[in-house]
Image 1: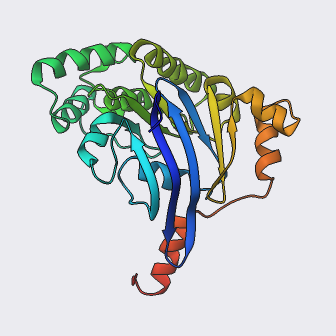
Image 2: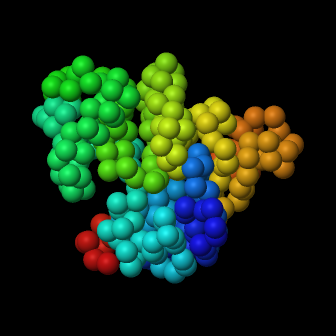
Image 3: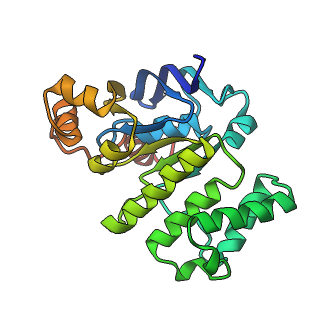
Length: 267
């Protein structure tokens, strides 16, 4: 693992049956404290890569280091190193905001005194302290996202993985969410690794951007480097120049699931 990098990926490969190479020998590093965007069309390999980084999938081959730990050998240490906000909602709607936070603290074995202080601190940061006793099912989409971010930070992670964190939110709420994330990056020095289909977000927020397509990293650099490389003026133009304009609909994992179902659930 290179000095100064909190995530290191070398020759990472993930093959699903029948011989679907979802991730095909990718290499990249994320610097400590960096805000790093991981972009790609549908089915490009983004979700598969994140699942391997976060111990949810075993790679077929290659090397991964997260905060100095190998996700396949030191799963617990890696899991304590990161927080994650999934694309799909993961809060318990029948619990209050405080109860959702408390449950997270219990799961990560945060000592009760520290847990109490941390919950108050984070709920105040995301402006939900006054709604701590409200059931989550009464929250708007933006409020739920803010709570998910606060929950993911409860155990003082070094890295925050954000998978489409502002999907479906209005522009004002999207902007507010990113202000919270940028402030947390500055205040706590936390590394941000995020995916998004909103090119304006990545252009505005990310310090470096990786673009994955057909399982391969096809571009990596700052906004200025990517637009210069493609002779374009915006990230969206650069993205389309690199990946093309063909609509992608199916991921490798979806294809694998469909194939398995067609065989009656057999692997």
